Length: 524
Image (spheres, helix red, strand yellow):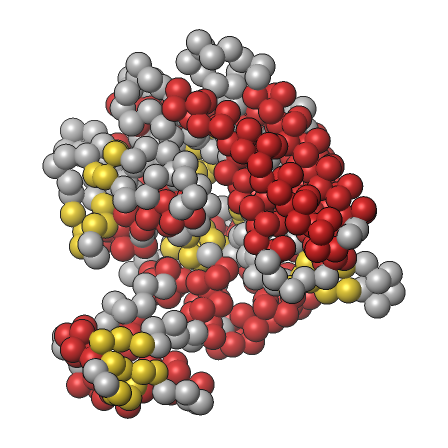
């Protein structure tokens, strides 16, 4: 019997997921957006029922209960590497006195907004548009789950510093060590935020020695989440003349590191942030001498833009390239491959840059090679001072145009940037994973007439147009990951996800789910 590896997943209990309520909010707001589309009542009800199912599954009392829900699908045949998520400093901005208090205030208003405004409006529109009592009942079930979230939130008092007793860092460590010791298929990754060292809470390198390198250690790798509010080149990570850093000890001992690397997901709440290390500002890598300011507030209608902005400034692949330049043999997984949306944009050479001011266009391509200039001038036609992308381009023409636009920095595609790093032979231990792949469609089963959300066709496109075109070395750099259970807020159930990957990759699934992960984990 084959043993597969899910290189990217999470096993959180109910207290931890509350702090990632933004995912719940985004899911519920997506229902509102669906009401504006030409969607059948059955399709909308499916989406709502899935959110209820997810909220029920992730509000388990213990992390072990969450693992058991995962293992119903994997049935002991998949080794998983659950990743910690350290949110202790997501909102404190080096301010111990007001440690996370803004989050508590904001989250209360979010609960109120969901229960008092968003869901009642959704239910009203659904009743008027579809006249469907079953649909209204489905929305009512979501309401009950949100109410359950709100009840859990009230467990602690307003005066206490830590928001949730069981959501803190130490509790995650204890939970994952318990599971790692009890189940052979669990190989957890230890979460690190360099700000812990600045607070005097830990010696990061010593913590790695204890939690990963000691004879009785129960962790197998390191997890970093830079958008939570720090730079990939923070001195604690990079090391100094006086002290070895996280990357140094991990490179020496071949300890694998998984880092979030897409422009979606989660990010720090602060609008003004003190950063130690490099950031990407105005397309330039700089080391700021004063706190940086974000244009978009996290708790606002522009939460998606806020997350993208923080990801770009704190977590862009260009910043991780600085890490690999100093530590070329670091075992590093740039997770998510930039995100499934950017993956498919790269794979399909989807050009969104369709119109530009003619003078600006010429300025932007001035630094390109003669060949790239010729490609772009052939791809665009000028009319009344504007450049317009030609229609009906061949795949070859579109590919050349897309790549020229990328080199002109008129396209910022994380998937392309990540792939350029992992395929580089100078970085032999750099990888990426396909976790949280959520590009898909609702399909109806001919046997049961039930709707399911499937990513199989999009994965087949990725497999045919991209993966199959790679050489063996390039194929060796891609890993299977589910991002369970966070991916279920945006995509298919874990069972559908796993089945679709196996169906789309067929025999090559062994490459990304057995061969490559074993090498990444140093299990060979």
